[in-house]
Structure formats: structure tokens, C-alpha cells
Image 1 (cartoon, rainbow, N blue to C red):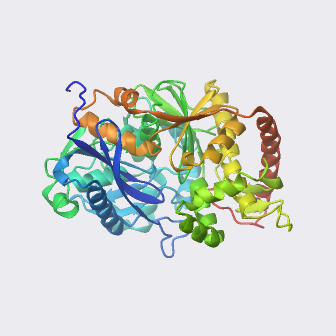
Image 2 (cartoon, rainbow, N blue to C red):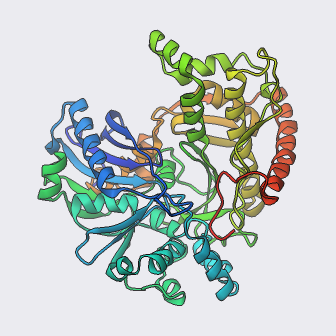
Image 3 (cartoon, helix red, strand yellow):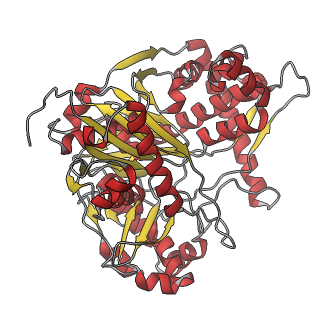
Length: 528
């Protein structure tokens, strides 16, 4: 590996395949974001398959190509200017391939079709989920084994052709470089992977009757796979001299892009889903109650304890699209983002959003994971009290409250109490949201200059592969620059403590309605 340089003539690209969108982002070697090409995508339920969330690899590769071309065009660069390309993605989404590397079948992250398979595994193999969780830090909720078993049971002809499996960021790199592989941070979320050894555990698959010879090589983030192929070059415009470099899971790369590369550091990534992560030693055993998931970090000696808040960003998008037509028009006239406009209105609403309690994501209960029906509680028919601004603020407060509950669960298992939280991704662009997070948690909130931390982490991988940086950790130390800090308001913190207790009681009652069959769960893990 070469020593670190300040080369400025080379550029780095990363492709981030998130739940709600795909982006190609170009950085210079000093960590400055140069341009982005982005497209929203959706993952639809498969016809006749309840709780499914398919990943359309044909349509989504076309979108990815468009994003790459758009990023190059916006930056006024050619493909030969890109020294290396890497990728990140939503974790848990998987792609199955045949012996020729052609895609057979794929699902996005929260596909929950394999309920019968999860029940089968738990009933036929007593204690198996606990056994696998102790090794992998994952439950069956989003794991690959039940889904592959579903393919075996429901698409036997497809299953017989399966020769390889990867995660979605691995699929992007395979499309670019024609090599199927994985890395610990993303492959680890499959649940067929060892936290300690940072490699696949084929014996897990064999034990439950799944092929054990379908697992590709596992490489560390930042390792070089090869070069962009002629075919990929003709499709997207990248050069055949552009290096293809192993990336990773969006949260772990996002952590690197936030400078969260040492044990004990804490971050919240506020994207389509919110993740609360705490860096821990890789030898730390997962908690026995299985409330929290544990994943390999992109830093080789670390794992991450993780809480997840479902749909926080997507709920905001839903609220915008359903309720905010007039605000969208107003924001367009003013030349500002509609979320900026809504925050300005919400800032005038008092702490607690006039008593509104949103019911969307539950706090993390990884071993038995389901949510209540989406709803707003305690609404008023007084339009001065209950309006779009107060409902918008309530959603911001709710994401922060659930995040705080998850951090408390992680503290109980790790002994690490957050005093300072790094906050990034889309939600960190909102000044009000940052301040609410500080007030709810009682912690200092640090926001980096580059909000799209996952993309920056991916660029670090590309740069390590190209020899521009010695390691991801040293690149993180060099490139992460802080923009703002938010200190908690003590009076508001006391109020939010009370609101958090009220929300916990309200959510418990809402779950009981789901249990009684009166309302429908927003999302339920397979097998529950």
C-alpha cells in the first residue's frame, strides 16, 4: 500500500443503494463532494406474495447507470477521471445468481415473505435462532437463510440454479467488475456470518438444509476486486482503468464517514431508516435477550451494537407527499426545500407538539420485532393546535425519542453511555431536528460538513483501494470536518423525559390492538 498523498487530479466515486434511492457521488481526494446523480426507487410487493419486497435488478441497474452518467455530467468529468469506484447499500437485501453470474432473484431489505420458513426453523431446530444469533449477532427477522429457504420451497427450479449469493452493494460491484464477493459489514447482516471470524459460516446453511457452497469470497472494505469491465464501461461511462473496490453496509460506511472509527463512539444515521450505532470491541458477545443486533464494522477490530428505527425518513416523505401540496408550492416559489419550510413552521410549535403522539416505529426488540399500526394519537380538532406544523414536529420528536430508547438498550448491554452523538444523513440537514435530538438525548450533537456520510465512507474505501489513503480509519481522521454542534436545552430535556414515558405506555397499548387483530401491524418480522 502506498503512503497517503494529497493528489487532487484523481476523483473517487461511490454508489449508495439505499432503501429509498440510489446515488452515484463523486468526491475529490480531500473529501470534498463534487457532484451527485440520484434517483428515487421503490421496492414493490410481489404479486401474490404477501409481505414481500422485491428488488428489480434490471430496472434498478438502469437507474444506477443513469445516476453514474448524471454524476459525471454534473461534475464535468469523464470516466477516466475516476480513479476508483466503490459501493454501499441497504443491508439485508440479497441477490441470488446462477453459475454464470446472472441474477436469478433478489429482495430489498425488509422483505418479510419468509414467515412460514422462520416458524419452521424455530419449531424443527430448537434454540437455533439463539445459537445463530450468538455467532452472527443477527436474528431471522431480516436474515438470508429463511428467504433462501423460501426460494427452495416456492421456486424450486430457481433454487436449483442458485450458485452464489451476495448483498446489494456487492451486486453493484459485480455489475461493474464481474466479480461476486462480499465484505463483513454487509455480508454480516445476512445472519450466515461470524462476528468473530469475519467470514461466512456455511455450516449454518448446511444445518438447515440449504446449499453450503453458494458463498462467495469475503474481502475487507477497501480491498481491490479489479477494474470496470468493457461491458460496464460501455453502459455507464466509467473507464476500464477505474478500479473496483470493496465497499460495505450503509451504516458501517456511514460511521466511517462520520469519524466514528474508535471503540465507544456513538452515531445516529438519519436516513430512510434511522440507525443508532455504538462501536464495541469485536470480541464482545451479543446480549442474551436479543433486543439489539450486532454487526461487523468496516474497521477490522470493531463491531457495532445497533438499534434501528423503522421508516423515519420514509414516513417524512409520506407526510410530505400526502399532506403538504401547498407547502411544496410555497417552497418552490421561495426557492427552498419543502422540509426547510416545514421546519420553520414546526419551530413555532412548543415542545411536545401540543400532545400529539405518533405511532410508527417501535423501539428495537430484535428477537420479537413488530410494530403497531401507523397512527397519530391525541389529535385535536382545534386547527390552531393540531395542524401540519405540529404533526410534522411530532414526527421529528418521535424519531429522536425512539432513537434515545434504543441507545438506552445498548447502554444496558455494553455499559457505554453516550455523551456525544455524531448525527448525519438527510435528517441532519434540519436544524430543528438536530436541536430536538440534543434535547431528547441530553447529549451534544455533532454534525459533519459532509452530511452524506455513507457516500463519504464509500469514497474512503475507493481511496484506500487506490492507495490514496493508508486505511479507512486514517482517511476518516483526515477527511471528516465538523460543521455544527448543538447543545441540549436542560428544560426541554426534562419535558422530553416525560413525553418518552407517555409514548412507551401508548405504544404498548397500540401493540395490544395488533395482538387482538383490531389493527394491522406496520411491519412484522417473519415467523411472528
